Image 1: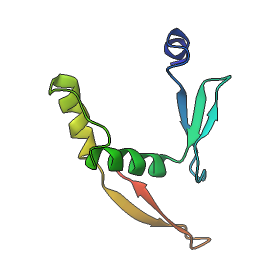
Image 2: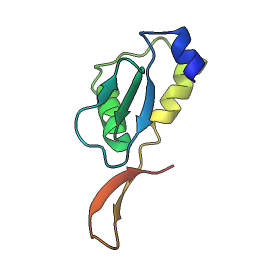
Image 3: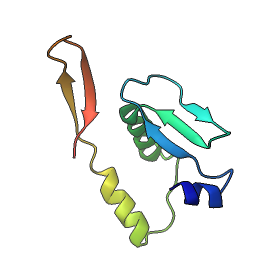
Length: 92
């Protein structure tokens, strides 16, 4: 992935999910990385697709595959047994 990021410098950032990261994404221009919360990121991208803020190209194999992935949006509520804190997570 690092080689792909380097080949497309300025256009590609490596994404790292941090479970307890909240709020704004943390962009690092120098290292071309971005840190965010996975569930928040998936919620935001799914919302943009569903509200037509992002328009997909004409149907082809890759857009059909992408659309299949968009249908896998099941979330469940998990509770930490020790602290009682609750959070939603996407499941396969």
